Amino acid sequence: MLKFFFGLIFFLIYISNPSIGLAFDSSDPSVSLLQNRISNNFSRKYCKAIQSGFSKDEAMKSAIVKTENIISFSYNPQKKWIEKDDLANQISLQVVNDCGWSFGLVGKEGVDYFKSYFLEIYEKTTPDKNFSR
Image 1 (cartoon, one colour):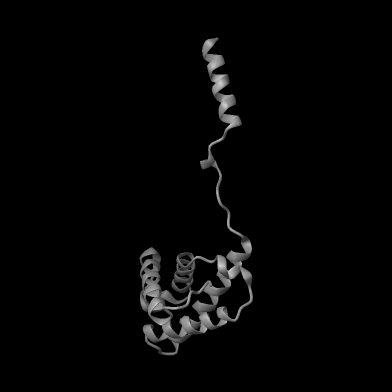
Image 2 (cartoon, rainbow, N blue to C red):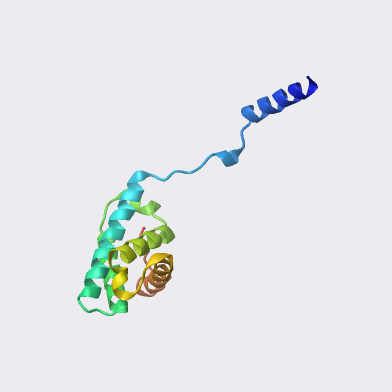
């Protein structure tokens, strides 16, 4: 009986004071949609440049600059909530799925390689800009 009361008291304390770790952050769907549009746009430009015979460096720089110009002139207030690392990951997934096979990038290794390559070229191409700001 004593164990039952201790269990009941513990349960009531736990219910009345839940731990903060149970809450989770959910992202805004409009940010995800904008991020998806950006990654689709970048992927189309990059894959088209590769298919036109550009080197991977030329294709990357061209796609970054063209996509950056579109984003810079966008008045969408959600762009400030996009994280560069998340966007780079989504762009990498999109490019590898769309045309990665044509230049030897497949699977997780291909996505990881393209992401690090994208971030490296992005920093060199637009050091004073940020895709999402």
